[in-house]
Image (cartoon, rainbow, N blue to C red; front, side, top):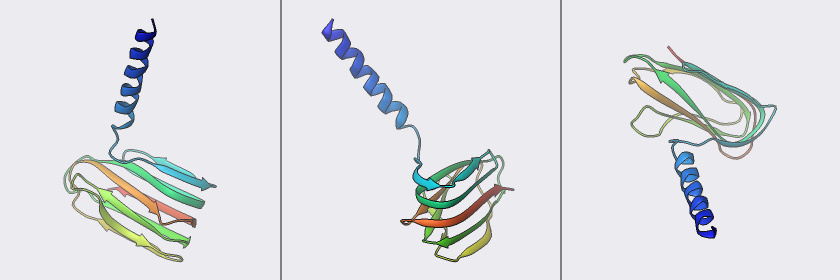
Length: 132
């Protein structure tokens, strides 16, 4: 009986590791007054205080679509990355008081990962991403 329980526990542990390791990027953060949303063609996050990283998954349905984005940050610094299948690439970097608005053109069809990484403690941030 003890042998069966040990085998069952080992199988559950292996299954747990397999299921948790399926994502390409993982989200982990501490935040206050944090609101976020992730739909197939748009995502946003707005916060009062934020530390860590947030990963969004968007879908580019056809070649030639673009990623429009806006971002602002009152204090701290953060870097936004994207991955369209070619690896993690910097999209923009923000420091205290910065605002940006731009478009990434000619996306490949498939999943577009957008990763917002805070470099320590950030305050009063607002990030929006839209596939067009």
